[in-house]
Length: 166
Image (tube, rainbow, N blue to C red; front, side):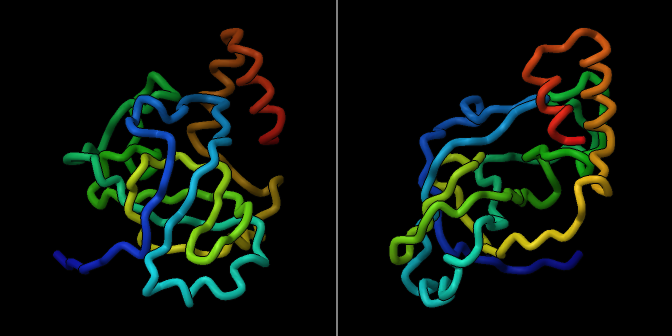
């Protein structure tokens, strides 16, 4: 099996100390502010980042242990494959989050919409430049779970999320 050595380019500063504090489930919107403290040796790589409204943050589920190929996410009662979920219990414990860049202060990026724990190691930052139109975006089993919840008289927050995603 191939292996690659990676190192952190920075760390997340977040109010979340425990995974139970991170909002999960159907209709969840991540609005928490946090800071990505980029290590000094990588600060030069932030040149021109201020021109982007959103960033992709590639990070490590540093507290996850082991993995499960099939699991039940908090958003559905049915089992799903790990690669169709956001589960932290993955063969490679890598997370990917789209965040809003509020501002840059030196090597600190002030972010909105984080879902990472305090101290989370960050592997990479990329500008978000998706060109997939919303009417062409498919959301797999998550759409089906949202519909089942709506058909069962799910909460108004979930219904509002479903409307926005269509």
